[in-house]
Amino acid sequence: MADTMGHSATATRNTSVALGFCLLAIAPQIFEFIWSIGTIFGWGAGRGPATVVISHVTALLAGAPSALLAGDTKKSSDVLLALMYSYPLFAVAILTIFMTIKSAQDYIGGIVLMALALFALWASSDLQGMRGFSFGAGTAPRMFGGLLVALSAGIALTGLMTDGPALAHYSWRGPLFVMAAILFFALAIRPLGLVVSAFVSFLIAALGSHETRWLEAVIVGACLTLGCALLFPYVLGLPMPMFPRFLVQ
Image (cartoon, rainbow, N blue to C red; front, top):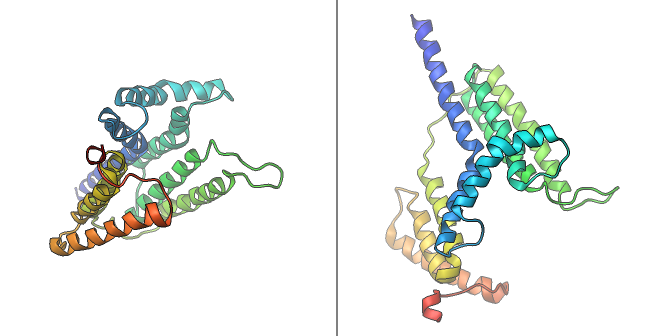
């Protein structure tokens, strides 16, 4: 009875981990879709939401399989993303369901690092490689990406072969608000300008901690905004808009 309950609990945990890996496998596509929503309001450049969804769904369901069968034909960026990033993680997710994980912390950490390495390999796939003994722009990212794939696979195998700690409790509040702050800054820098975008982004990031003291956060945010307003346009010479468009116009 106890063995049956233990096996059921393990299967439930493995299924949850596998679902997490499936979500990780389509994380870049989800991010691009969220980014594309800003194009509707003129906050960024790129493809529209409908185009993003159709392109990635087609690449995942039809484009990548046909590219595998076709061989050495030129592949689009969406198809390469499915082949080099999403499909390997989907395969890992399926295998995870049937595996006995002895150290969840090592196994999940290794797979997350592997996802980062696979994404780096995809991102550098259109860069020039080595020609003879000369390094191209994509040589170093591919070397480090391949090395990280090997190391992360070793960490994941350690989680399957040796006993270790269970997955520790992880708070998503901090990373969630930091990512939201980065996304807001990227979308708002053109219409709202550096001053407003930097200050609001800092306050959004400050929401990631229960210990935030808002008076201090506002003062620090104002100081950092002033520093950015002096650093980027005057010290570094970057042509960034300083104030919202409706005030400048």
